[in-house]
Amino acid sequence: MEMKGKRQIFLFYAGVFLLHAGFQGVFALVSSLNIKEGLGTTSLSVAFAVSLPVILLTPFLSEVVGIKRFLLLSEIFCLLYVMANSISSYYTLIPAGFLFGFGEAVSWTMILVIGSYFSHKSLKHQFARESLHTGYLFAATQGGRCFSNAIAFLCLFVDRQISNSFQFNRTLNLDVCGTNDCQISNITTANFQQYTPIHKATRYVTIAVFALLLTASLFTHILCIPNYISNQLSDLSKGSSRNLAENGLTAVITPDNYVSADGDLLTKSFEEDAIRKPTDADVKIKAIDLLKMCTKSMVELFLQPKHLLIVLMPVYVGTTMAFVMSELTRSFASCMLGVDKVCICVVIFAATQSLVSLLTGKLSAKYGRNLPFLTGFLVELVTYCFCLTWLPSQDTTALVYVIFLLFGISSGILVSLVNATFGHYLSEQKSLALNFWNLWMNLGYFIQFAISKFACVYVKIYLQIGLLVTSFIGYDFLRGEKIYPLIM
Image (cartoon, rainbow, N blue to C red; front, side):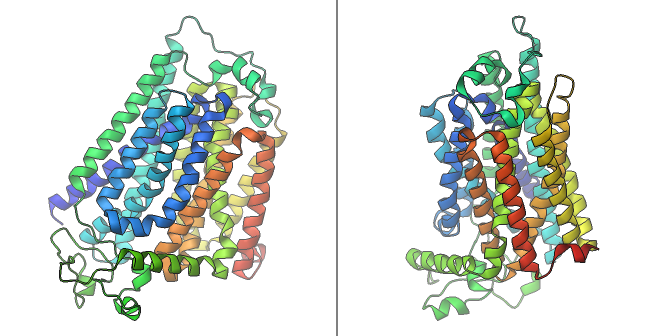
């Protein structure tokens, strides 16, 4: 591979790193920075409500708008949401939430498509391509999350240190923290300094740093991503033009649907096929026909019994990630330790999740998915029970770090396995299946953020336990056999 190609791949994933470094830090802090009247979680509930129809339309819109322009537009929207957090107001955060919902939904899919484009361009074998892409993507997203929270911790730590008028509130009434946090306005106001920076300038500086990271991501992707990337719907075409022809349509369909900006062949494993950039002579699919095809394929996939049995698993993953980033960060980290410690907790969670995900991949390849699934289920269940029964005191608040560690372990197992399970059981239409996985996970985010200010934390934990058990029952039925005999 030429050095130019290597540089392109490096710059693309560096941009992904900067993208996640730019918005993940704000994402973890938003429920604390905007705690009054639950404004932070309300803006996120709006965002993930908007993301649901956007995800459904992404395959169609990406064909109309173009892959590169779609990603750049999503990054601009994420930038606007981050900047809106400099002022805690309904008039800024709610409209920005609409934009963030669009940007968050689109960016994931576009990053996957562009990453596949670069991996097809550089390597011949499918397994090597997928391994390269997954490894780079994993390192970029999780590394960005850790980096962003390290920056936020530094800013908030300095904020605490330079203040001569504020001493950390070690006499806080812990009875209103943890599972007893119900976001009662008068209690929140009385402990307001636990959740926000002392100096307004600290908030502005923190947001400005994140905005600069997102701006750097935007310009990096402008420079390194080719203007033309083909993204014909491989799940609809099944690798040929025959299925389109049956519908009275013709299009340039290729085995892997990826060509270079110059129309060059990217993989030598399909030399018999003509892989080229579409020309004006090609008969294009009409937008309305493409939309109909997308809708038909998604409805057919949705109604598959296998999909209906495991649909609750990504929903649960979404509610859990939202629970960690909104409830744990606010009710446990901010309330008991102070807002400056939120970032340490999130770094512990993200780093643990990353390491456990890597280990889970190796174990599941050797022993199958059931043993890791059962481990993740038990760790998550025990952690919920501990949160419900723990009576925090001034001497035991450090256990908050342990809670984030445990959730990092369980989510590291479940997130990767649920993704793999969706791709495995719905492999006939894998791309659409993974798009549904994104849809249901975002639905989980929306549900958790939507109920955030209306229910106490202990109520949400009981809901989490119920959803966890129900989702695993569906997986058990899909297997057609009980989990525990396979383990023993």
